[in-house]
Image 1 (cartoon, rainbow, N blue to C red):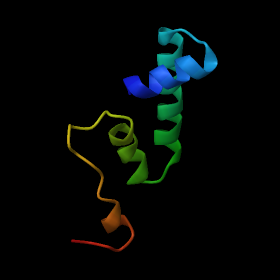
Image 2: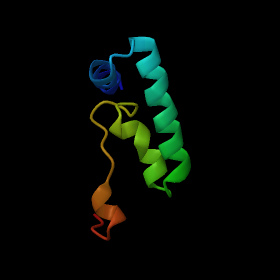
Image 3: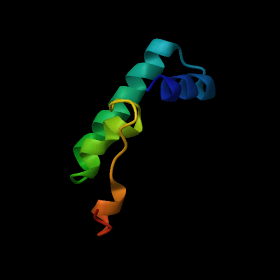
Image 4: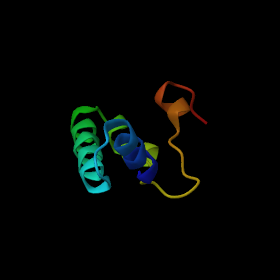
Length: 65
């Protein structure tokens, strides 16, 4: 998430704390609006998941294992 916070800060000129708060608001919004299992994957996409852990998107679209 730090990378996203830095990107927001650089592009908007906002401070780190304000950028972090903005990112958290957007993440919360997405998690609340996206259908499962996508909403639960938001943390993984922004770095909140475990290292090396990636969502299994193939199974979401019938790819299975």
